[in-house]
Each structure stands twice: as C-alpha cells, then as structure tokens.
Length: 140
Image 1 (cartoon, rainbow, N blue to C red):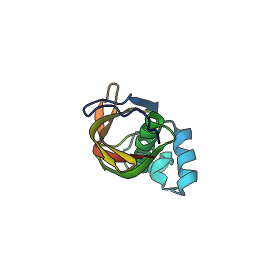
Image 2 (cartoon, rainbow, N blue to C red):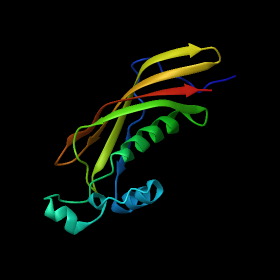
Image 3 (cartoon, rainbow, N blue to C red):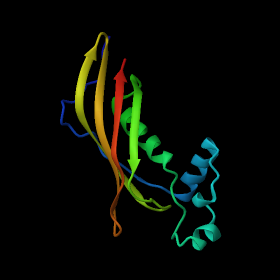
C-alpha cells in the first residue's frame, strides 16, 4: 500500500485562505439545518450591536478538515478534530487556516499524522478566530 508523501514533523501545510460570504454561510446553514438568526438577520444583529452576520463556529471545523483533505488527498480520513473559538468572525471576513505537522506514527499499514492548527482573520481587524486546534489524519 502506498501513502501520500508525509511531510516531516515541523512542516507547514499550505495555508487555506477563504473569504466567507453570506452566500457561503446560507449554504452551510442549509446543509447543517442551523438557522439561528445570528447568522443572517440584520435586525437581530443590529439589536445586539453586531456589525454583520456571525459565521457559524462549526464552519471552521469544515475548513480545517478541507485543508487537511486537500493536502493529503483521497487516502486521508480525519480521525479526530478539536478546536476552540477565540473571536467572532463575520460575513465578508477573510480567514487563514494554518496547519503544522507535530507527529507522524506508523500503525501497521496505516500512517497517522497529528497536526496543530489555527484560524486567523486578516486585514484591518486582524485577530485569532480559532486556537488552539488540532487534527489526527489517518492515511490508508
């Protein structure tokens, strides 16, 4: 069995940059059945002093999994994922997902890569959105 090339411990995966639009957020809400008004209702947001719809926190989990799977390919299976929210992210913000290999183990015919990750928002209002975060990716 051949595995995708595993970068050495300490290696950085390519950064995933994505501007999260309201259209993205509505599509995500439809796929997860999360229709909380915090994610789309301008009147609701204004009453709470929020400048724009708030990105659903689970969206970041989807981005981190996509980043890992894009890098490792079709042989990758995300075994575990954890992350902690640090700041709100709003519709129109551009996020950057970063990931670093922290361990690589061989378990029989499987290779398991452990990754440390974070998500930040760039621009004039730069901030950490998600940290700490991490994944274990099994390569079959």
